[in-house]
Length: 164
Image (cartoon, rainbow, N blue to C red; front, side):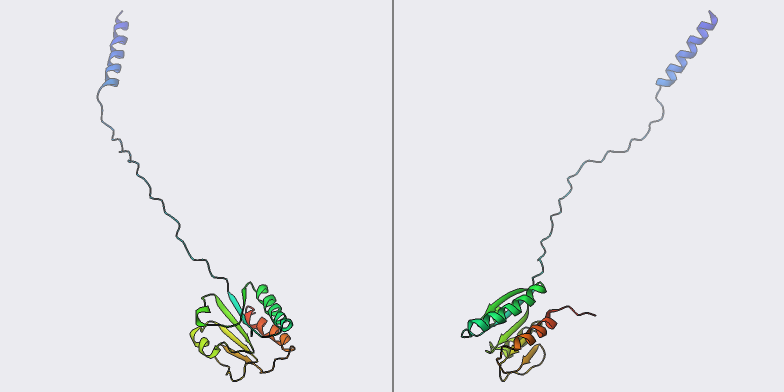
């Protein structure tokens, strides 16, 4: 009986010490959830597709006009440029994406437009009295249809990336 009493007292002692107030363990504070701000994507302007403009006289015969248009169109499409044909050109037409202006037989005012658009290459074909320099290139004052081949090569050299 004594052993039973002894075991009973030990069990009560263990139970009481187990249930006693011990050292308090610090519980880290839980973070209060906050709303994360949503970052909206910023709108960036897409780079403009380069533009080439062909300026033809309004009274040019249809066959020659179509030949020039097809030649310049093929070259611009091969280099990923947009293409427009116009009968005149003003400073309002000098948009940021404009890279090349090819003018045939009539001067749309290249001598005044060239300084206003230094990043645009102007090619004047068959326009008398125009002086080459800076961003203006001038080809003879004849209007022969054979110049189309030269125009194609020259324009290709202007729009092609540098091989170096």
